[in-house]
Length: 157
Image 1 (cartoon, rainbow, N blue to C red):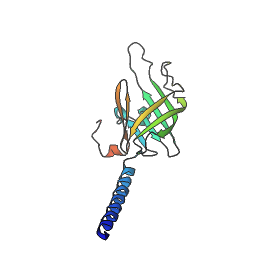
Image 2 (cartoon, rainbow, N blue to C red):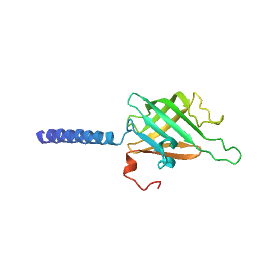
Image 3 (cartoon, rainbow, N blue to C red):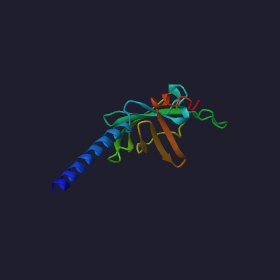
Image 4 (cartoon, one colour):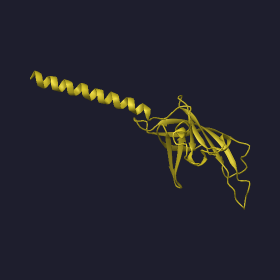
């Protein structure tokens, strides 16, 4: 009986140890605060010509959108804006967030009327330390953490 009780106690301690270790690892894969997650298409562009997300620990963040749309029909379709948002984690593992519109500011390059941000702007993002992913009707968009770009220096070259 003592052996059985000792084995159960030992197994419980081992389980708690594993859970503790896994929770410590989880912190390494979570969303990074005050770091830019840059749109994969713009990682090598100048900062003023990048689209990115930036999250703050107070539950707010910004999405800066830059888009240079060259069209023979309307060459003035360049636009830039910054959405300030509030976000909430979707799950207990903190693997996804939903961002909700708070305000918007348009940039000087914003010349098109079709790109106005509505107050119902929202986005669902899967998150990790190194990458955000947004899925939409046009496919997936990946946003890469600015620090992780140092580990993949040839990406987007």
